[in-house]
Length: 241
Image 1 (spheres, rainbow, N blue to C red):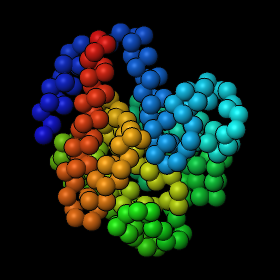
Image 2: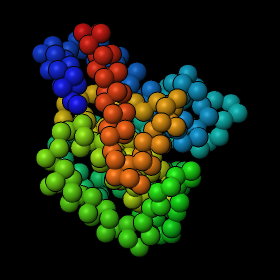
Image 3: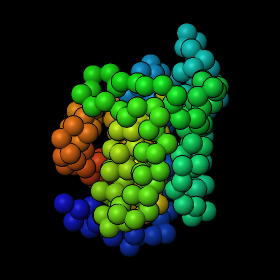
């Protein structure tokens, strides 16, 4: 399942160090695409070009403050993620809360970085997240799984499963989707893979794959979606180096 991915990664690794300005341009493009698509999946109406302009510090007329903050916050969360990886820091509940705090900063400060204190449903999904009083226990189980059993998995599968389990717990009132996609890429990037972009145009397939994983235990559709998107990112790198 991962043979093609690993072959491309080895080829990319063989070309390191990559040209400085090529890496910079790819990184800026991925940061934009990642931010735009992750926010668009959650209902942000800024276009790709409007997102680019907001990242450059310009306000878009007719768009809400929340939509502007979602762009800036997501960018800051990616930068924080890069710091965690650069410093080789372990994944903990504290780190996850920090990532989430950045996502909701100025948008909903009451719940930014705090587990939910009420029950929720996921619109359109058959899966029902656990009761709010079980969230802390489930998150502890997630970190324990990550530190032990998950380490036996291929890094790409581990990244996909981290996303699946986290979003199934749905530990926060809001911002779970964006946080889960950040965690997905945290695990990929930590293991030397480039980040993936779950595209807004694929959101129905994305949601269906997640709900299938949560309700049937069959994770293959979601893992394959991650593999497809990772192939796209690797192809982008390889086409430019």
